[in-house]
Image (cartoon, rainbow, N blue to C red; front, side):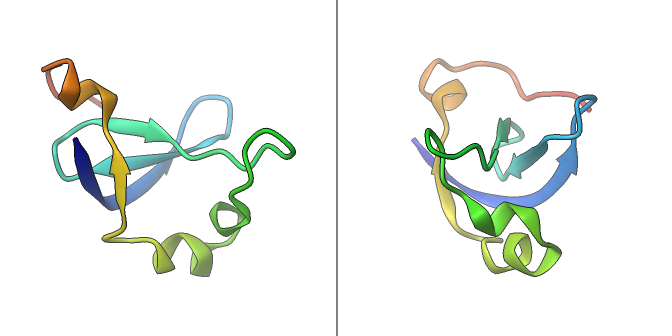
Length: 68
């Protein structure tokens, strides 16, 4: 199920995590050549993706909301 991005935070390793409207979190790493998300590197890039939808596997599995 797709869910909109509502915000971001850094995890313990310093990787960016998207906070989704459903209450789940999802890593949004820029790790070329496997994952190419240069927008995650800058504040402006992350802001430009607010409201964009990501597929939430946790929603598909009916998982409870994540806690931060």
